[in-house]
Length: 280
Image (cartoon, rainbow, N blue to C red; front, top):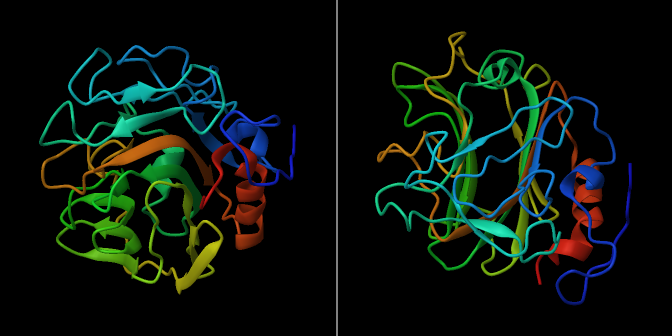
Protein backbone atom coordinates (compact mmCIF):
# COMPACT_ATOMS: atom_id res chain seq x y z
CA UNK A 1 0.00 0.00 0.00
CA UNK A 2 1.46 3.35 -1.04
CA UNK A 3 1.39 6.10 1.56
CA UNK A 4 2.48 9.46 0.23
CA UNK A 5 2.95 12.66 2.16
CA UNK A 6 2.46 14.87 -0.90
CA UNK A 7 2.95 18.63 -1.04
CA UNK A 8 0.41 20.97 -2.57
CA UNK A 9 1.18 23.10 -5.59
CA UNK A 10 1.48 22.82 -9.35
CA UNK A 11 -0.68 21.80 -12.31
CA UNK A 12 -2.86 18.80 -13.05
CA UNK A 13 -1.40 15.28 -13.23
CA UNK A 14 1.66 16.04 -11.10
CA UNK A 15 4.10 13.19 -10.44
CA UNK A 16 2.97 11.11 -7.50
CA UNK A 17 -0.77 11.52 -8.06
CA UNK A 18 -2.50 8.54 -6.50
CA UNK A 19 -5.89 6.90 -6.25
CA UNK A 20 -8.01 7.31 -3.13
CA UNK A 21 -7.48 3.63 -2.26
CA UNK A 22 -3.71 4.25 -2.09
CA UNK A 23 -4.19 7.38 0.06
CA UNK A 24 -5.91 5.46 2.86
CA UNK A 25 -3.18 4.62 5.42
CA UNK A 26 -5.27 1.86 7.01
CA UNK A 27 -7.91 -0.22 5.18
CA UNK A 28 -9.33 -1.79 8.34
CA UNK A 29 -13.15 -1.87 8.10
CA UNK A 30 -13.14 -0.22 4.67
CA UNK A 31 -16.41 -1.22 2.98
CA UNK A 32 -16.44 0.96 -0.14
CA UNK A 33 -13.91 2.99 -2.10
CA UNK A 34 -14.66 4.56 -5.49
CA UNK A 35 -12.58 6.96 -7.58
CA UNK A 36 -13.64 8.18 -11.04
CA UNK A 37 -10.02 9.01 -11.89
CA UNK A 38 -8.90 5.40 -11.42
CA UNK A 39 -9.58 3.12 -14.39
CA UNK A 40 -10.04 0.21 -11.98
CA UNK A 41 -13.07 2.08 -10.64
CA UNK A 42 -14.39 3.87 -13.75
CA UNK A 43 -13.31 1.97 -16.84
CA UNK A 44 -15.15 3.93 -19.52
CA UNK A 45 -16.57 7.38 -20.22
CA UNK A 46 -19.87 5.88 -21.43
CA UNK A 47 -22.75 7.49 -19.55
CA UNK A 48 -24.08 4.31 -17.94
CA UNK A 49 -20.73 2.84 -16.81
CA UNK A 50 -20.77 1.25 -13.35
CA UNK A 51 -18.53 2.71 -10.64
CA UNK A 52 -16.55 -0.25 -9.38
CA UNK A 53 -15.49 -0.69 -5.77
CA UNK A 54 -11.71 -0.54 -5.23
CA UNK A 55 -11.96 -2.30 -1.88
CA UNK A 56 -11.99 -6.07 -1.69
CA UNK A 57 -15.75 -6.15 -1.06
CA UNK A 58 -17.18 -5.82 -4.57
CA UNK A 59 -19.70 -3.11 -3.65
CA UNK A 60 -20.04 -1.76 -7.19
CA UNK A 61 -22.45 1.10 -7.86
CA UNK A 62 -24.62 1.70 -10.90
CA UNK A 63 -24.89 5.03 -12.71
CA UNK A 64 -28.34 6.59 -12.48
CA UNK A 65 -31.42 4.80 -11.24
CA UNK A 66 -31.23 1.79 -13.58
CA UNK A 67 -28.54 -0.59 -14.85
CA UNK A 68 -28.98 0.87 -18.35
CA UNK A 69 -28.59 4.44 -19.56
CA UNK A 70 -31.02 6.93 -18.03
CA UNK A 71 -31.39 10.66 -17.43
CA UNK A 72 -29.66 10.51 -14.05
CA UNK A 73 -26.35 9.03 -15.28
CA UNK A 74 -23.48 11.34 -14.23
CA UNK A 75 -21.50 12.91 -17.11
CA UNK A 76 -17.73 12.18 -17.01
CA UNK A 77 -15.03 14.78 -17.73
CA UNK A 78 -11.31 14.15 -18.08
CA UNK A 79 -9.20 11.21 -19.24
CA UNK A 80 -9.99 7.69 -18.05
CA UNK A 81 -7.36 6.55 -15.56
CA UNK A 82 -5.40 9.82 -15.53
CA UNK A 83 -5.61 10.30 -11.73
CA UNK A 84 -5.53 14.09 -11.85
CA UNK A 85 -7.89 16.72 -10.47
CA UNK A 86 -9.45 16.98 -13.94
CA UNK A 87 -11.25 13.61 -13.66
CA UNK A 88 -14.75 13.94 -12.23
CA UNK A 89 -18.43 13.43 -12.94
CA UNK A 90 -20.94 16.26 -12.91
CA UNK A 91 -23.88 15.99 -10.53
CA UNK A 92 -26.17 18.91 -11.23
CA UNK A 93 -29.38 17.68 -12.81
CA UNK A 94 -28.43 18.86 -16.30
CA UNK A 95 -29.70 15.69 -17.94
CA UNK A 96 -32.87 15.75 -15.84
CA UNK A 97 -33.85 19.27 -14.76
CA UNK A 98 -35.81 18.03 -11.73
CA UNK A 99 -33.42 15.42 -10.37
CA UNK A 100 -29.72 15.05 -9.63
CA UNK A 101 -27.30 12.76 -11.43
CA UNK A 102 -26.13 10.00 -9.10
CA UNK A 103 -24.46 6.67 -8.40
CA UNK A 104 -26.47 4.16 -6.38
CA UNK A 105 -26.71 0.52 -5.30
CA UNK A 106 -29.22 -1.88 -6.80
CA UNK A 107 -29.80 -3.02 -3.19
CA UNK A 108 -28.22 -1.77 0.01
CA UNK A 109 -25.32 -3.91 1.28
CA UNK A 110 -25.92 -5.25 4.79
CA UNK A 111 -23.16 -3.08 6.31
CA UNK A 112 -24.84 0.08 4.98
CA UNK A 113 -28.02 -0.78 6.87
CA UNK A 114 -26.16 -0.34 10.18
CA UNK A 115 -25.44 3.40 9.78
CA UNK A 116 -28.91 4.62 10.78
CA UNK A 117 -29.27 2.12 13.64
CA UNK A 118 -28.27 1.97 17.30
CA UNK A 119 -24.52 1.49 17.97
CA UNK A 120 -23.51 2.75 14.51
CA UNK A 121 -19.77 3.22 13.93
CA UNK A 122 -18.73 4.60 10.53
CA UNK A 123 -17.06 7.25 8.39
CA UNK A 124 -18.36 8.59 5.07
CA UNK A 125 -15.70 10.49 3.11
CA UNK A 126 -16.29 12.35 -0.17
CA UNK A 127 -14.20 14.47 -2.57
CA UNK A 128 -16.34 17.10 -4.26
CA UNK A 129 -16.04 20.50 -5.94
CA UNK A 130 -18.69 23.23 -6.22
CA UNK A 131 -18.63 25.21 -9.47
CA UNK A 132 -20.80 28.09 -8.25
CA UNK A 133 -22.25 29.73 -5.16
CA UNK A 134 -25.32 27.54 -5.74
CA UNK A 135 -23.34 24.35 -5.06
CA UNK A 136 -24.98 21.54 -3.08
CA UNK A 137 -23.88 17.93 -2.55
CA UNK A 138 -25.82 15.18 -0.84
CA UNK A 139 -25.58 11.45 -0.29
CA UNK A 140 -27.80 9.08 1.63
CA UNK A 141 -31.01 7.10 1.53
CA UNK A 142 -33.85 9.30 2.83
CA UNK A 143 -36.20 11.93 1.44
CA UNK A 144 -37.43 13.38 4.73
CA UNK A 145 -37.95 12.57 8.40
CA UNK A 146 -40.84 10.23 7.59
CA UNK A 147 -38.31 7.81 6.05
CA UNK A 148 -35.79 5.51 7.71
CA UNK A 149 -32.13 6.06 6.84
CA UNK A 150 -29.56 8.88 6.80
CA UNK A 151 -28.14 11.72 4.73
CA UNK A 152 -24.83 13.60 4.68
CA UNK A 153 -24.83 16.95 2.92
CA UNK A 154 -23.06 20.25 2.54
CA UNK A 155 -23.95 23.35 0.55
CA UNK A 156 -22.86 26.87 -0.31
CA UNK A 157 -26.14 28.84 -0.63
CA UNK A 158 -26.81 28.20 3.09
CA UNK A 159 -23.22 27.65 4.23
CA UNK A 160 -23.35 24.47 6.27
CA UNK A 161 -22.53 20.81 6.65
CA UNK A 162 -24.97 18.36 8.12
CA UNK A 163 -25.81 14.78 8.97
CA UNK A 164 -29.28 13.42 9.74
CA UNK A 165 -30.61 10.05 10.85
CA UNK A 166 -34.32 9.64 10.14
CA UNK A 167 -36.21 7.13 12.25
CA UNK A 168 -39.59 7.22 10.47
CA UNK A 169 -42.80 8.79 11.70
CA UNK A 170 -41.57 12.33 11.11
CA UNK A 171 -38.66 12.44 13.53
CA UNK A 172 -34.87 12.47 13.45
CA UNK A 173 -32.84 10.23 15.73
CA UNK A 174 -29.98 12.67 15.13
CA UNK A 175 -29.76 15.98 13.28
CA UNK A 176 -26.45 17.84 13.32
CA UNK A 177 -26.08 20.97 11.16
CA UNK A 178 -22.98 23.14 11.42
CA UNK A 179 -23.08 26.59 9.82
CA UNK A 180 -19.46 27.32 10.67
CA UNK A 181 -18.11 24.94 8.03
CA UNK A 182 -18.44 26.97 4.83
CA UNK A 183 -17.41 25.09 1.66
CA UNK A 184 -15.39 27.08 -0.90
CA UNK A 185 -16.22 27.12 -4.60
CA UNK A 186 -14.00 26.14 -7.55
CA UNK A 187 -11.64 24.11 -5.40
CA UNK A 188 -11.64 20.48 -4.34
CA UNK A 189 -13.12 19.65 -0.95
CA UNK A 190 -12.48 16.58 1.21
CA UNK A 191 -15.61 16.38 3.35
CA UNK A 192 -16.45 13.66 5.85
CA UNK A 193 -18.70 12.65 8.72
CA UNK A 194 -17.40 10.22 11.34
CA UNK A 195 -19.50 8.76 14.18
CA UNK A 196 -19.16 6.32 17.05
CA UNK A 197 -22.74 6.33 18.30
CA UNK A 198 -22.21 4.36 21.52
CA UNK A 199 -19.32 6.65 22.48
CA UNK A 200 -21.42 9.72 21.59
CA UNK A 201 -18.57 11.09 19.48
CA UNK A 202 -19.27 12.71 16.12
CA UNK A 203 -17.04 14.68 13.77
CA UNK A 204 -17.67 16.78 10.67
CA UNK A 205 -14.56 17.43 8.55
CA UNK A 206 -13.92 19.88 5.70
CA UNK A 207 -10.39 20.35 4.28
CA UNK A 208 -8.72 20.23 7.67
CA UNK A 209 -11.45 22.11 9.55
CA UNK A 210 -13.43 20.08 12.07
CA UNK A 211 -16.54 20.32 14.19
CA UNK A 212 -17.23 17.85 17.00
CA UNK A 213 -20.70 16.97 18.26
CA UNK A 214 -22.51 14.51 20.49
CA UNK A 215 -23.67 11.71 18.20
CA UNK A 216 -26.03 9.74 20.44
CA UNK A 217 -29.08 8.58 18.46
CA UNK A 218 -32.50 9.14 20.03
CA UNK A 219 -34.74 6.06 19.58
CA UNK A 220 -33.38 5.09 16.13
CA UNK A 221 -35.32 2.70 13.94
CA UNK A 222 -34.26 -0.94 13.70
CA UNK A 223 -35.97 -1.22 10.30
CA UNK A 224 -34.28 -1.29 6.92
CA UNK A 225 -33.62 1.99 5.11
CA UNK A 226 -36.48 3.37 3.05
CA UNK A 227 -34.50 3.26 -0.17
CA UNK A 228 -31.05 2.52 -1.56
CA UNK A 229 -28.05 4.71 -0.83
CA UNK A 230 -26.74 7.07 -3.50
CA UNK A 231 -24.02 9.65 -4.02
CA UNK A 232 -25.61 12.72 -5.63
CA UNK A 233 -28.96 12.80 -3.85
CA UNK A 234 -30.27 11.69 -0.48
CA UNK A 235 -33.02 9.55 -2.01
CA UNK A 236 -32.65 8.14 -5.53
CA UNK A 237 -33.40 11.55 -6.99
CA UNK A 238 -36.85 11.94 -5.42
CA UNK A 239 -37.92 15.48 -6.24
CA UNK A 240 -38.45 16.31 -2.56
CA UNK A 241 -35.02 15.14 -1.41
CA UNK A 242 -31.84 17.17 -1.15
CA UNK A 243 -30.44 17.28 -4.70
CA UNK A 244 -26.86 17.92 -5.77
CA UNK A 245 -26.46 21.16 -7.73
CA UNK A 246 -23.41 22.58 -9.54
CA UNK A 247 -21.19 19.91 -8.02
CA UNK A 248 -18.40 17.67 -9.30
CA UNK A 249 -17.80 14.28 -7.69
CA UNK A 250 -14.36 12.64 -7.79
CA UNK A 251 -14.14 9.95 -5.13
CA UNK A 252 -15.57 8.55 -1.91
CA UNK A 253 -14.95 5.95 0.78
CA UNK A 254 -17.09 4.45 3.53
CA UNK A 255 -15.79 2.71 6.65
CA UNK A 256 -18.23 0.72 8.80
CA UNK A 257 -17.21 -0.52 12.21
CA UNK A 258 -14.57 2.21 12.42
CA UNK A 259 -14.81 5.97 12.97
CA UNK A 260 -11.80 7.84 11.60
CA UNK A 261 -10.53 10.71 13.74
CA UNK A 262 -9.29 14.12 12.62
CA UNK A 263 -5.65 12.99 12.45
CA UNK A 264 -6.54 10.09 10.14
CA UNK A 265 -8.63 12.33 7.90
CA UNK A 266 -5.82 14.90 7.79
CA UNK A 267 -3.41 12.17 6.68
CA UNK A 268 -5.71 11.21 3.79
CA UNK A 269 -6.10 14.89 2.88
CA UNK A 270 -2.33 15.31 2.81
CA UNK A 271 -1.76 12.13 0.80
CA UNK A 272 -4.15 13.41 -1.89
CA UNK A 273 -3.09 17.07 -1.86
CA UNK A 274 -0.66 16.60 -4.74
CA UNK A 275 -3.50 15.38 -6.94
CA UNK A 276 -6.44 17.54 -5.87
CA UNK A 277 -4.74 20.78 -4.78
CA UNK A 278 -7.27 21.18 -1.99
CA UNK A 279 -8.17 24.79 -1.20
CA UNK A 280 -6.27 26.24 -4.17
